[in-house]
Length: 340
Ligand code: NAD
Ligand code: UFG
Image (cartoon, rainbow, N blue to C red; front, side):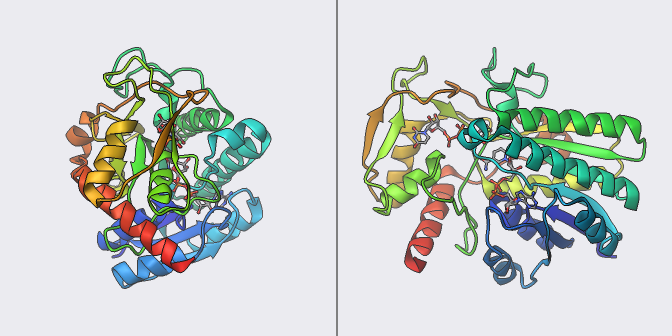
Protein backbone atom coordinates (compact mmCIF):
# COMPACT_ATOMS: atom_id res chain seq x y z
CA UNK A 1 0.00 0.00 0.00
CA UNK A 2 1.21 3.51 -0.78
CA UNK A 3 2.40 5.32 2.33
CA UNK A 4 1.32 8.94 2.77
CA UNK A 5 3.77 11.57 4.03
CA UNK A 6 2.82 15.05 5.24
CA UNK A 7 5.40 17.54 3.95
CA UNK A 8 5.09 20.88 5.74
CA UNK A 9 6.72 23.67 3.75
CA UNK A 10 6.58 21.37 0.74
CA UNK A 11 6.00 24.21 -1.74
CA UNK A 12 9.38 25.70 -0.80
CA UNK A 13 12.88 25.14 -2.15
CA UNK A 14 14.01 21.98 -0.36
CA UNK A 15 10.46 20.73 0.21
CA UNK A 16 9.53 20.71 -3.49
CA UNK A 17 12.68 18.75 -4.41
CA UNK A 18 11.90 16.33 -1.59
CA UNK A 19 8.33 15.94 -2.87
CA UNK A 20 9.83 14.81 -6.18
CA UNK A 21 12.14 12.33 -4.46
CA UNK A 22 9.31 10.98 -2.29
CA UNK A 23 6.94 10.53 -5.21
CA UNK A 24 9.64 8.90 -7.30
CA UNK A 25 10.23 6.52 -4.38
CA UNK A 26 6.54 5.54 -4.35
CA UNK A 27 5.26 7.67 -1.44
CA UNK A 28 2.09 9.75 -1.60
CA UNK A 29 2.76 13.37 -0.66
CA UNK A 30 0.47 15.91 0.95
CA UNK A 31 1.94 19.40 1.24
CA UNK A 32 0.97 21.72 4.10
CA UNK A 33 2.13 25.24 3.23
CA UNK A 34 0.90 28.80 3.79
CA UNK A 35 2.85 30.02 0.72
CA UNK A 36 4.47 32.77 2.82
CA UNK A 37 7.78 32.17 0.99
CA UNK A 38 6.74 30.14 -2.04
CA UNK A 39 4.19 29.77 -4.81
CA UNK A 40 1.98 26.80 -5.56
CA UNK A 41 3.58 26.82 -9.06
CA UNK A 42 6.31 24.69 -7.51
CA UNK A 43 3.76 21.90 -7.10
CA UNK A 44 2.97 22.16 -10.82
CA UNK A 45 6.71 21.77 -11.39
CA UNK A 46 6.68 18.63 -9.24
CA UNK A 47 3.82 17.35 -11.40
CA UNK A 48 5.70 18.01 -14.63
CA UNK A 49 8.67 16.05 -13.29
CA UNK A 50 6.86 13.12 -11.68
CA UNK A 51 3.47 13.04 -13.42
CA UNK A 52 1.69 13.56 -10.09
CA UNK A 53 0.72 16.82 -8.36
CA UNK A 54 1.11 16.42 -4.60
CA UNK A 55 -2.05 16.89 -2.56
CA UNK A 56 -2.05 20.42 -1.18
CA UNK A 57 -3.47 21.99 1.97
CA UNK A 58 -2.92 25.75 2.09
CA UNK A 59 -2.62 26.19 5.84
CA UNK A 60 -0.47 27.93 8.38
CA UNK A 61 1.24 25.53 10.77
CA UNK A 62 0.81 28.06 13.57
CA UNK A 63 -2.99 27.81 13.24
CA UNK A 64 -3.75 25.10 15.79
CA UNK A 65 -7.31 24.36 14.66
CA UNK A 66 -6.48 24.35 10.96
CA UNK A 67 -3.60 21.96 11.66
CA UNK A 68 -5.79 19.59 13.63
CA UNK A 69 -8.42 19.63 10.86
CA UNK A 70 -5.80 18.96 8.21
CA UNK A 71 -4.30 16.08 10.19
CA UNK A 72 -7.81 14.68 10.63
CA UNK A 73 -8.17 14.66 6.83
CA UNK A 74 -4.81 12.88 6.50
CA UNK A 75 -4.88 10.62 9.54
CA UNK A 76 -3.64 7.80 7.29
CA UNK A 77 -0.22 9.51 7.02
CA UNK A 78 2.71 7.47 8.33
CA UNK A 79 5.11 10.37 8.81
CA UNK A 80 5.82 14.08 8.63
CA UNK A 81 8.74 15.94 7.11
CA UNK A 82 8.72 19.35 8.74
CA UNK A 83 10.35 21.99 6.52
CA UNK A 84 7.99 24.87 7.25
CA UNK A 85 10.00 27.69 8.79
CA UNK A 86 11.18 31.21 8.17
CA UNK A 87 14.90 31.16 7.36
CA UNK A 88 16.35 34.65 6.89
CA UNK A 89 19.05 35.06 9.53
CA UNK A 90 19.16 38.88 9.38
CA UNK A 91 15.38 39.27 9.48
CA UNK A 92 15.27 37.00 12.54
CA UNK A 93 17.51 39.45 14.41
CA UNK A 94 15.05 42.27 13.65
CA UNK A 95 11.87 40.26 14.24
CA UNK A 96 12.77 37.58 16.79
CA UNK A 97 9.23 36.96 18.01
CA UNK A 98 7.99 36.38 14.49
CA UNK A 99 10.67 33.68 14.12
CA UNK A 100 9.99 32.02 17.48
CA UNK A 101 6.24 32.10 16.91
CA UNK A 102 6.42 30.75 13.38
CA UNK A 103 9.20 28.19 13.68
CA UNK A 104 8.48 26.89 17.17
CA UNK A 105 4.70 27.47 17.27
CA UNK A 106 4.37 25.56 13.99
CA UNK A 107 6.54 22.71 15.24
CA UNK A 108 4.60 22.39 18.51
CA UNK A 109 1.29 22.27 16.63
CA UNK A 110 2.66 19.55 14.36
CA UNK A 111 3.86 17.47 17.31
CA UNK A 112 0.49 17.89 19.09
CA UNK A 113 -1.44 16.84 16.00
CA UNK A 114 0.91 13.90 15.43
CA UNK A 115 0.21 12.65 18.96
CA UNK A 116 -3.54 13.14 18.56
CA UNK A 117 -3.71 11.26 15.24
CA UNK A 118 -1.07 8.67 16.03
CA UNK A 119 1.37 9.74 13.31
CA UNK A 120 4.66 8.69 14.87
CA UNK A 121 7.55 9.57 12.57
CA UNK A 122 9.02 13.03 12.05
CA UNK A 123 11.96 14.31 10.03
CA UNK A 124 13.06 17.80 11.11
CA UNK A 125 15.01 20.36 9.05
CA UNK A 126 17.85 21.45 11.27
CA UNK A 127 20.96 23.28 10.21
CA UNK A 128 24.74 23.35 10.48
CA UNK A 129 24.17 26.68 12.19
CA UNK A 130 23.76 24.69 15.46
CA UNK A 131 27.56 24.08 15.45
CA UNK A 132 28.38 27.81 15.43
CA UNK A 133 32.17 28.14 15.05
CA UNK A 134 33.25 24.52 15.57
CA UNK A 135 36.45 23.85 17.51
CA UNK A 136 37.42 21.08 15.12
CA UNK A 137 36.66 20.44 11.47
CA UNK A 138 34.93 18.67 9.88
CA UNK A 139 31.90 18.87 12.18
CA UNK A 140 30.55 15.48 13.24
CA UNK A 141 27.19 14.91 14.91
CA UNK A 142 29.14 14.74 18.21
CA UNK A 143 30.71 18.17 17.75
CA UNK A 144 29.49 20.27 20.70
CA UNK A 145 26.74 22.71 19.80
CA UNK A 146 27.50 26.40 20.32
CA UNK A 147 25.14 29.09 21.53
CA UNK A 148 23.13 30.26 18.54
CA UNK A 149 24.16 33.56 16.99
CA UNK A 150 20.69 34.54 15.74
CA UNK A 151 17.07 33.94 16.70
CA UNK A 152 16.79 31.81 13.54
CA UNK A 153 19.64 29.62 14.79
CA UNK A 154 17.99 29.44 18.22
CA UNK A 155 14.81 28.10 16.64
CA UNK A 156 16.83 25.21 15.20
CA UNK A 157 18.56 24.37 18.52
CA UNK A 158 15.25 24.70 20.39
CA UNK A 159 13.38 22.76 17.72
CA UNK A 160 15.82 19.86 18.12
CA UNK A 161 15.32 19.96 21.92
CA UNK A 162 11.53 20.16 21.67
CA UNK A 163 11.57 17.05 19.50
CA UNK A 164 13.98 15.18 21.81
CA UNK A 165 11.80 15.91 24.85
CA UNK A 166 8.65 14.88 22.98
CA UNK A 167 10.13 11.58 21.80
CA UNK A 168 11.42 10.94 25.34
CA UNK A 169 7.89 11.37 26.65
CA UNK A 170 6.20 9.31 23.89
CA UNK A 171 7.82 5.93 23.34
CA UNK A 172 5.90 5.35 20.09
CA UNK A 173 7.44 8.38 18.51
CA UNK A 174 10.60 8.46 16.42
CA UNK A 175 12.52 11.38 14.93
CA UNK A 176 15.36 12.14 12.59
CA UNK A 177 17.08 15.50 12.90
CA UNK A 178 18.81 16.46 9.67
CA UNK A 179 21.49 19.14 9.91
CA UNK A 180 21.81 20.62 6.44
CA UNK A 181 24.99 22.33 5.39
CA UNK A 182 24.57 24.72 2.41
CA UNK A 183 21.95 23.49 -0.06
CA UNK A 184 22.37 24.81 -3.63
CA UNK A 185 21.26 24.00 -7.16
CA UNK A 186 17.95 23.03 -8.70
CA UNK A 187 16.24 20.07 -10.28
CA UNK A 188 18.11 19.17 -13.50
CA UNK A 189 14.84 19.56 -15.46
CA UNK A 190 14.74 23.27 -14.62
CA UNK A 191 11.14 22.82 -13.43
CA UNK A 192 11.75 23.69 -9.76
CA UNK A 193 14.41 25.62 -7.87
CA UNK A 194 15.02 28.31 -5.29
CA UNK A 195 12.88 31.47 -5.46
CA UNK A 196 14.49 34.04 -3.17
CA UNK A 197 12.33 36.95 -2.13
CA UNK A 198 13.92 40.29 -3.08
CA UNK A 199 17.68 40.69 -2.80
CA UNK A 200 19.20 37.29 -1.99
CA UNK A 201 21.08 36.84 1.28
CA UNK A 202 22.68 33.60 0.21
CA UNK A 203 25.69 33.22 -2.02
CA UNK A 204 24.35 30.88 -4.73
CA UNK A 205 21.28 32.89 -5.79
CA UNK A 206 23.39 36.06 -5.60
CA UNK A 207 25.90 34.50 -7.98
CA UNK A 208 23.23 33.41 -10.47
CA UNK A 209 21.42 36.77 -10.32
CA UNK A 210 24.71 38.59 -10.89
CA UNK A 211 25.56 36.30 -13.79
CA UNK A 212 22.10 37.05 -15.22
CA UNK A 213 22.76 40.81 -14.96
CA UNK A 214 20.04 41.38 -12.34
CA UNK A 215 22.70 42.46 -9.81
CA UNK A 216 25.62 44.63 -10.88
CA UNK A 217 28.22 42.72 -8.91
CA UNK A 218 28.60 40.22 -6.11
CA UNK A 219 30.02 41.45 -2.82
CA UNK A 220 32.47 38.88 -1.52
CA UNK A 221 32.32 39.25 2.24
CA UNK A 222 35.93 39.14 3.48
CA UNK A 223 39.19 37.98 1.91
CA UNK A 224 41.33 37.87 5.04
CA UNK A 225 40.00 34.82 6.88
CA UNK A 226 42.39 32.28 8.31
CA UNK A 227 41.54 29.79 5.53
CA UNK A 228 43.69 28.47 2.64
CA UNK A 229 42.73 31.31 0.25
CA UNK A 230 41.42 33.84 2.78
CA UNK A 231 37.76 33.33 1.85
CA UNK A 232 35.02 31.68 3.92
CA UNK A 233 34.60 27.96 3.44
CA UNK A 234 31.27 26.07 3.31
CA UNK A 235 30.00 22.65 2.37
CA UNK A 236 27.70 23.17 -0.62
CA UNK A 237 25.34 20.26 -1.10
CA UNK A 238 23.15 19.62 -4.14
CA UNK A 239 19.47 20.03 -3.25
CA UNK A 240 18.57 16.80 -5.06
CA UNK A 241 21.09 14.86 -2.98
CA UNK A 242 19.60 16.52 0.09
CA UNK A 243 16.11 15.49 -1.01
CA UNK A 244 17.25 11.88 -1.43
CA UNK A 245 18.55 11.90 2.15
CA UNK A 246 15.01 12.63 3.40
CA UNK A 247 13.72 9.51 1.69
CA UNK A 248 16.55 7.50 3.26
CA UNK A 249 15.81 9.00 6.69
CA UNK A 250 12.11 8.15 6.42
CA UNK A 251 12.86 4.60 5.37
CA UNK A 252 15.22 4.27 8.32
CA UNK A 253 12.43 5.23 10.73
CA UNK A 254 9.71 3.28 8.97
CA UNK A 255 12.09 0.33 9.08
CA UNK A 256 12.04 0.48 12.87
CA UNK A 257 14.87 2.79 14.01
CA UNK A 258 13.94 3.96 17.50
CA UNK A 259 14.33 7.25 19.35
CA UNK A 260 16.00 10.33 17.91
CA UNK A 261 18.72 10.03 15.28
CA UNK A 262 20.82 12.97 14.07
CA UNK A 263 22.61 13.22 10.74
CA UNK A 264 24.80 15.80 9.07
CA UNK A 265 23.92 16.29 5.42
CA UNK A 266 26.85 17.64 3.47
CA UNK A 267 29.40 16.49 0.94
CA UNK A 268 32.30 16.32 3.37
CA UNK A 269 34.15 18.85 1.20
CA UNK A 270 34.84 22.49 1.95
CA UNK A 271 34.66 25.04 -0.88
CA UNK A 272 35.63 28.69 -0.51
CA UNK A 273 33.55 31.59 -1.82
CA UNK A 274 36.17 32.27 -4.51
CA UNK A 275 36.35 28.59 -5.47
CA UNK A 276 32.57 28.56 -5.89
CA UNK A 277 32.65 31.66 -8.11
CA UNK A 278 35.41 30.15 -10.27
CA UNK A 279 33.64 26.79 -10.45
CA UNK A 280 30.42 28.53 -11.52
CA UNK A 281 32.27 30.45 -14.22
CA UNK A 282 33.87 27.33 -15.61
CA UNK A 283 30.66 25.25 -15.39
CA UNK A 284 28.59 27.85 -17.25
CA UNK A 285 31.06 29.98 -19.22
CA UNK A 286 29.46 33.07 -17.65
CA UNK A 287 31.46 35.70 -15.76
CA UNK A 288 30.47 36.79 -12.27
CA UNK A 289 31.61 40.38 -11.60
CA UNK A 290 32.56 40.69 -7.93
CA UNK A 291 34.08 43.12 -5.44
CA UNK A 292 35.80 42.30 -2.20
CA UNK A 293 33.70 43.75 0.64
CA UNK A 294 34.13 43.80 4.42
CA UNK A 295 33.39 40.67 6.41
CA UNK A 296 29.69 40.05 7.07
CA UNK A 297 28.85 40.14 10.78
CA UNK A 298 28.22 36.72 12.27
CA UNK A 299 29.82 34.69 9.45
CA UNK A 300 31.55 31.48 10.49
CA UNK A 301 35.02 31.43 8.85
CA UNK A 302 34.90 27.77 7.85
CA UNK A 303 32.61 24.81 8.29
CA UNK A 304 32.11 21.56 6.47
CA UNK A 305 30.53 18.26 7.36
CA UNK A 306 31.69 14.88 8.35
CA UNK A 307 28.75 13.11 6.69
CA UNK A 308 30.03 9.57 7.16
CA UNK A 309 27.32 8.70 9.70
CA UNK A 310 24.60 9.23 7.08
CA UNK A 311 26.51 6.98 4.72
CA UNK A 312 27.06 4.28 7.35
CA UNK A 313 23.55 4.29 8.81
CA UNK A 314 21.28 5.51 6.02
CA UNK A 315 23.30 4.29 3.05
CA UNK A 316 23.12 7.81 1.67
CA UNK A 317 25.83 10.10 0.38
CA UNK A 318 25.99 13.17 -1.84
CA UNK A 319 26.85 12.08 -5.38
CA UNK A 320 26.18 15.05 -7.68
CA UNK A 321 29.27 16.72 -9.13
CA UNK A 322 29.59 20.41 -8.19
CA UNK A 323 29.75 21.30 -11.91
CA UNK A 324 26.34 19.68 -12.48
CA UNK A 325 24.86 21.44 -9.45
CA UNK A 326 26.12 24.82 -10.66
CA UNK A 327 24.81 24.16 -14.16
CA UNK A 328 21.37 23.33 -12.70
CA UNK A 329 21.38 26.53 -10.63
CA UNK A 330 22.15 28.51 -13.80
CA UNK A 331 19.52 26.69 -15.88
CA UNK A 332 16.92 27.55 -13.20
CA UNK A 333 18.03 31.19 -13.03
CA UNK A 334 17.70 31.56 -16.80
CA UNK A 335 14.23 30.09 -16.67
CA UNK A 336 13.16 32.44 -13.87
CA UNK A 337 14.69 35.42 -15.72
CA UNK A 338 12.78 34.47 -18.91
CA UNK A 339 9.47 34.48 -17.03
CA UNK A 340 10.00 37.91 -15.46
P1 NAD B 1 11.73 27.90 1.84
O1 NAD B 1 11.40 29.22 2.42
O2 NAD B 1 11.91 27.79 0.37
O3 NAD B 1 10.62 26.82 2.27
C1 NAD B 1 9.94 26.89 3.48
C2 NAD B 1 8.45 26.73 3.18
O4 NAD B 1 7.72 26.77 4.41
C3 NAD B 1 7.89 27.84 2.30
O5 NAD B 1 7.16 27.26 1.24
C4 NAD B 1 6.98 28.65 3.23
O6 NAD B 1 5.88 29.20 2.54
C5 NAD B 1 6.58 27.59 4.21
N1 NAD B 1 6.21 28.09 5.54
C6 NAD B 1 6.91 28.90 6.37
N2 NAD B 1 6.24 29.10 7.51
C7 NAD B 1 5.09 28.40 7.42
C8 NAD B 1 3.98 28.20 8.28
N3 NAD B 1 3.91 28.79 9.45
N4 NAD B 1 2.98 27.40 7.87
C9 NAD B 1 3.01 26.78 6.65
N5 NAD B 1 4.04 26.94 5.80
C10 NAD B 1 5.06 27.73 6.18
O7 NAD B 1 13.03 27.36 2.62
P2 NAD B 1 13.95 26.09 2.34
O8 NAD B 1 15.28 26.58 1.94
O9 NAD B 1 13.25 25.11 1.51
O10 NAD B 1 14.10 25.55 3.83
C11 NAD B 1 13.36 24.45 4.31
C12 NAD B 1 13.80 24.15 5.73
O11 NAD B 1 15.19 23.87 5.76
C13 NAD B 1 13.59 25.30 6.73
O12 NAD B 1 13.20 24.75 7.96
C14 NAD B 1 14.96 25.91 6.84
O13 NAD B 1 15.14 26.57 8.06
C15 NAD B 1 15.84 24.68 6.73
N6 NAD B 1 17.21 24.96 6.29
C16 NAD B 1 17.42 25.60 5.10
C17 NAD B 1 18.72 25.90 4.70
C18 NAD B 1 18.98 26.63 3.40
O14 NAD B 1 20.07 27.15 3.24
N7 NAD B 1 18.03 26.70 2.48
C19 NAD B 1 19.82 25.52 5.50
C20 NAD B 1 19.57 24.84 6.69
C21 NAD B 1 18.26 24.56 7.08
N1 UFG C 1 28.58 35.43 0.78
C1 UFG C 1 29.20 36.43 0.06
N2 UFG C 1 28.40 37.31 -0.62
C2 UFG C 1 27.04 37.22 -0.62
C3 UFG C 1 26.43 36.18 0.12
C4 UFG C 1 27.23 35.31 0.82
O1 UFG C 1 30.42 36.55 0.05
O2 UFG C 1 26.39 38.06 -1.25
C5 UFG C 1 29.42 34.49 1.51
C6 UFG C 1 29.17 34.52 3.01
O3 UFG C 1 29.98 35.50 3.61
C7 UFG C 1 29.56 33.09 3.40
C8 UFG C 1 29.21 32.26 2.16
O4 UFG C 1 29.09 33.19 1.11
O5 UFG C 1 30.94 33.04 3.60
C9 UFG C 1 27.91 31.51 2.32
O6 UFG C 1 26.89 32.42 2.72
P1 UFG C 1 25.35 32.04 2.68
O7 UFG C 1 24.58 33.21 3.17
O8 UFG C 1 25.00 31.48 1.35
O9 UFG C 1 25.26 30.81 3.69
P2 UFG C 1 25.60 30.76 5.26
O10 UFG C 1 26.59 29.66 5.41
O11 UFG C 1 25.91 32.06 5.82
O12 UFG C 1 24.16 30.36 5.85
C10 UFG C 1 23.45 29.22 5.41
C11 UFG C 1 21.95 29.45 5.56
C12 UFG C 1 21.58 29.56 7.01
C13 UFG C 1 22.11 28.43 7.79
C14 UFG C 1 23.59 28.29 7.55
C15 UFG C 1 24.15 27.07 8.21
O13 UFG C 1 21.56 30.61 4.90
O14 UFG C 1 20.18 29.51 7.11
O15 UFG C 1 23.84 28.14 6.16
O16 UFG C 1 23.45 25.96 7.77
F1 UFG C 1 21.89 28.63 9.10
